[in-house]
Structures are given as C-alpha cells and as structure tokens.
Length: 238
Image (cartoon, rainbow, N blue to C red):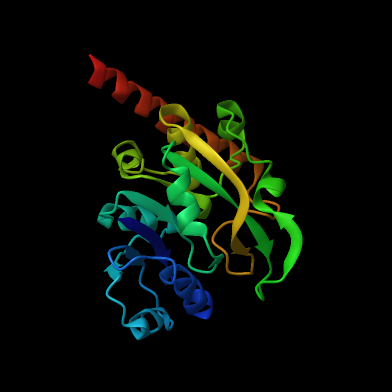
C-alpha cells in the first residue's frame, strides 16, 4: 500500500493538476493523505470535488509547511511513503519506478524538471541545480535533497518522527536520517515537474533570501537535532 503525503495551504490554483497526476498512478487500496493548514481559498472545495475515497483529508493548525507535513506523515498507513508538494505535477510511471527502486533500498530521492508556473521547462533539473549527492558532510553543510522528491519505506518513520522542534527544513532532516541509518538510492530520471512560482514555500532552484546568520542558525539547529538523534540511538542500544 502506498501513502502519498501532501501538506496544503491556499493551494487551489495548482492543486487540481497535481492531485489528478497522483491519483491516476495509485491503486484502489492506496491513499493520498492531505493535511490542510487552514486554507482560506478554494483548496478544500477542489479536493472535495474529486469525490475520491483514496483522498483522506486532515486538518492542522501548525502555521508551518514543515509541521503540516509532519501531521500528514502521522496519518500514513501505507508500507511506502511518498512525499508531495501541492503545486507540482507527477509524470507517468513515477509511482511504479519508486516501488521498484525500494525493492533493494529504504529511501529514494528522485529527480525533477524545474518548470515555471505554466509548466514550461527551462532545461534545468533538480539534481543538476542542487548537485544532489549522498555525501553526509555535503548534505549537512548544504542540503541537496528536496522533500517532494523523497519516498521511503514506512519503517523510516520510526526515526523521522516526531520532527525536532525548531526544525529549519524537513527535507534535510529526512535526508540526513536516511543517509545515516538507511540505504538511499538516487533516481536520475526526472519524474516530476517541479513548479516554481512566487508563492512557493521553499527557495529550491533559486537563490536563498535567508541572511548569513539565519543560515548559520539553521545548520546549528539541524546539527543539534542530529546529535540528539544519535544520543537516543546509543541509549536504545545500551
């Protein structure tokens, strides 16, 4: 069983295209878990219009895309967890490719075409833009893995959840846990259209607007969370 986990917030403009591209790839027993963080646009109406029992809608009050995703992950019942943004489009074969890759790995990170709000490609890919790799130190200093490109087996959740407090990026947290504890595979074939527009929650594919001090604080928070994670593992092994 596959659980697709998607946080939403005022995403009505692009949501129908994304949900349609996902549902067509899911089996009848799969689920699309949506955690909505108090949308005041037409998001809920767009979702209800699908009238599809595979869509399972939950409500959150986190005021954070990071912890809104955490709420979605807590509801997932599938053996395979696939993360999703609300405004991309999945390309055909994405789910089957992920399933196949997870046969001999625990986590996969897929590539994607970077597109504008009208889904026009500029020739760039996520892997190319971020120089995505599996080196631990590299990803600690500068994250190269994007959350909506990640999928993993459900057992990974035992280490990923709960998210640490003051987590700056969920994708870096999940990616680092994967690299430190599990078998991670990179899939070069782009399988999503990664839409960039003025309302994106993340700056992936564009220059970060965060100050130098903010970037330093983010890295300290991640390192402290990973240190606490490592200490908890030691205690479990005693």
